[in-house]
Image (tube, rainbow, N blue to C red):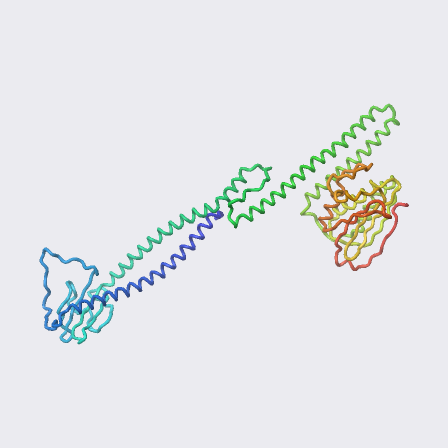
Length: 468
């Protein structure tokens, strides 16, 4: 049974039926006891009335026979049902008065006052006997217990019928109330069914039951996050398409110029521009792929203990050629620093930091890469003595596709946004400051260190990769 409406209906109705059944059983037992007491009181009242109706000289009567009615006036059933009574003179055991059809023998042979249940002519009777003050005259009154059973059954049938009717009314009322209560949920379901797959507007939550509203509100918050993510992705795709289209157009222009050149020397300049354009396009494509991979592996990237200094050294050596081409010097300062992270993601982070420093630092500039453990944290620093970044742009340099105005270098605007996302996923913080000797630009990424490695001393390696 997967329907919430059916579950509520069955459970609530079942609880009512069980409670009602227990109540009916208890009431039935109480009713049976009460009816027995009522019968006994009724027999006692009848016996006393008959006794008080007898003349004081009844002792002189003889019970030879009863009077008879005329044929035109047949006897009618008494309101008390089948009733048998006898009036006995106890001293001589003489039945002087008895009801029509009464047993010829005494209804209570022991002639003791009070109640008793006896078998008379194969039928069970309830008998009551009462005597006068001289204890000479006794009235015996009896009724068959089958009438009590029949009356009890009749009242039980009436009670069961009434209960069944009430249960039917209750079931219909419960079903209507449940349907009415869940109608807003049905409207939400219908709204979801007819909604377009790209429609991420919030679902209607007005009129929802208090138990369902938090679920729909949570779903609406999820839709809001999805909508913002979709908008960011659409914006990213549009900007990425623009960023790719611009260098491709430039590449086409350089290629056409080279084709129109009449000599190799004349074609050399556009071909060099073409090579630099291809490098920029390749770098942009790689960063776009890295961004897409980070989004795809956000929840499934493998983490483990990593020696950050080793990765820093490897990545820094990869930029020797680019730094040499611009006559730049790089100083590497590392010590054993173990953190928990993903090797590929950290390689992207370090590579983008160093690439950004090499790219925007002018010819003959200096770069410093440092990885040290300080106070249970690992600090990764990349400093340069380039033109730096104005303070007003510090908060925006990590936005995707943002470029610092006035720079001669044309970057993609994706590198530092990747750095910020990878740092956040590793629980790291980013600090921005000045570069070497108070000039240029510096970025510090602070990682939490693995506790078991914080207290281990390590040798510090400080060496210039390229001469100053």
